[in-house]
Amino acid sequence: MRILIHAPEAPRWQETLRRELRPTLPNASIVTTQEAGEGPADILVVWKPPASLLACQDASLKAIFNAGAGVDALLSLPGLPDVPIVRLRDAGMGALMADYALYGILHFYRDMDRYRQQQLEHHWQEQPLDDRSAWRVGIVGLGTLGQACAQRIRAQGFEVQGWSRSEKHIEGIKTHHGDTGLTTLLNTSRVIVSLLPDTPGTRWLLDEQRLAQLPEGAVVINAGRGTTLDPDALLGLIERGHLRGAMLDVFPDEPLPAQHPLWQDPRVIVTPHVAAPTDVSAGARQFAADILALTRGESLDTVDPATGY
Ligand code: NDP
Ligand code: OXD
Image (tube, rainbow, N blue to C red):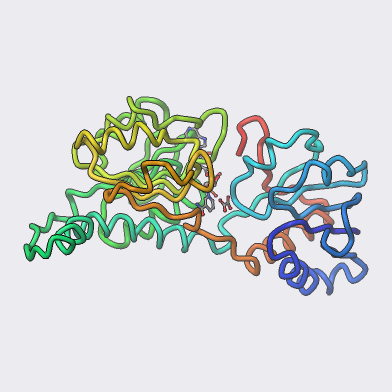
């Protein structure tokens, strides 16, 4: 079996895959494109591969392993071979994403935005502290990472609700789905944390009309994909005083263009797509287990190209 890796930190993926697979697949060749170049493989482990790497695959290719959670970049490539696609499922990202979401919620809930402004003005004034119950959190995209965030935020004493495509039942979390479900969630959340993938069904979902459904003073956190939220509409609602602020990790164009007004606005925290970096060791362990399952003929948890995630 030939496993070809094309991803950031490829030697670390290689080292962990070799260690995990050696006992069962001692003859597997596990190489990186840096050392072996592009060529046909049985398994590809890739993050944003060049189309040329896909073009040189043949009938021996059995699966593509996407070295991240979002598959939008991979699915958009021309000539994507028709084989199962496996993505990272949590693999250490859930805890990091929950840190990110919690930081954003606490930043606004504990008035750090206002204290920062007061500091700039040398102004000493205590802000009245809301009860946590006034800060219901809505998770938009209640998948692997959304659920990890929901559980941690709830454990911190916040009421949490979530929205997904399919109907869900999760203990302690109020769940919504469908169009009316999204309206209800937006109407009743003081903070939303969006963790949606980029798919034909989610693109520009959080537009001006939907963001305006949030109550006055609400806060928006987006760490899913930038194409799911209209940044100009968000900024307009902040400027008009309807929304209080935002923390954004993802943008329609990355890096966020230098002249974009989001950089300047003190009510917006901009981070450079770092909410939940891939944990290579955990990711490679998941992929090794999946590759072994594949060799045993077991079915894998794969991406559905029809829905795009
Ligand atoms: P999942 O596929 O597990 O979850 C996606 C969620 O979105 C599911 O709840 C799904 O609903 C929901 N969803 C998808 N399409 C729709 C739709 N049309 N309407 C309503 N809900 C929809 O993904 P993960 O939780 O693992 O990751 C989420 C995203 O986070 C990734 O796709 C990636 O873009 C982003 N990400 C960002 C990182 C960062 O550092 N900023 C790091 C890692 C990931 P259902 O449950 O019904 O299927
Ligand atoms: C991912 C990401 O999808 O890093 O894994 O955004």
